[in-house]
Amino acid sequence: MNSGKTFIIAELSANHNQDFDLAVKTIEAIAEAGADAVKIQTYKPESLVLNMDNEYFGTIQSGLWKGLRRYDLYKMAATPYEWHPKLQQIAQNLGLVFFSSPFDFEGVDLLVSMHVPIYKIASFEINDIPLIKYVAKQGKPVIMSTGCANIDDINLAIEACKEMGNEQITLLKCTSEYPASYDRANLLTIPDMKKRFGLPVGLSDHTLGSVVPLTAVVLGAEVVEKHFILDRSLGGADSAFSMEPAEFRQMVNDIRNAETSLGQVKYEITEQERLKRRSLYAVEDIKKGDIFTSSNVRSLRPGYGLSPFFYEKLLGKESVRNIKRGEPLTSEDLC
Image 1 (tube, rainbow, N blue to C red):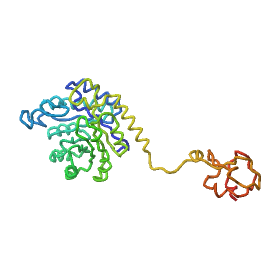
Image 2 (image 1 turned 60 degrees about the horizontal axis):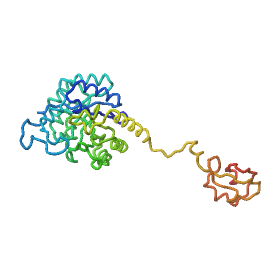
Image 3 (image 1 turned 30 degrees about the horizontal axis):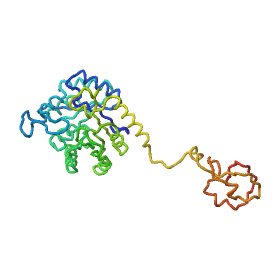
Image 4 (image 1 turned 135 degrees about the vertical axis):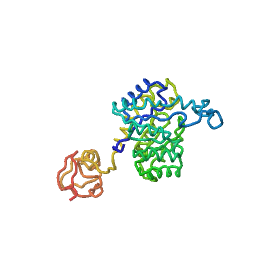
């Protein structure tokens, strides 16, 4: 991160469908699609919920996962711990940064043993201050999604990191809906977050397509995270809002082009640009002593002659030289 380019993260999440070979193929496709990093999630179902069917931990009542038991959903979506080091090695061999979102202390300890370079705090964990402190004290950069946080929550999370002596913090604007709609993206929050919190800000995106990530980059996002899947027809918990390889590659290309097009604040023009502008030309043969009039002088392209700014000043003056039709006027003609 902080290389001057948007740090683009492909989120594997549940898109391995509990198939190690599929996870490997997906990471290979992530590298080919131009991502900077692959992120996974480090948890066991019991890291998140209890395996019981009461009103709090039972069946999900709405949304993409309606009808699924919470414990069963997370069991299906979890990335087995024994895969972690193997996937890390594969990703690193492909030139990808490999990191994860831990959801409890055990998950953090696993990632510490793997020497991951970055930690991510998911939106739903933004208020778990003990977890944030435990992550922050590892001394690595911390990325925090804010999809379930208000200003006070974000401030508390930032202070938790700083209390541990860690100021390597990046915030992600996020809409924690799956998939999220455009009207809920509220991307104008990104420049406000940068100003309000004085930290790098990016986007964790669950909308369909690449319009929202591109807009976010133009608004100053320094990180973009999107879910990645080999083929949405594979199904799975996160398939509905994940990008396929060609879509992700196009997003990466568009982001890089957007970065280039942003350029810098520039008002100067080149000589080539100046010559494209209008200037004053004789449109009739003008003899020495003739009067410059609107009939014999016009403003035309290209800009090899006197600026049209001097047109009114020139009218009524006597020509001090012979000028052929089609010849540009010069500062000499103002004398």
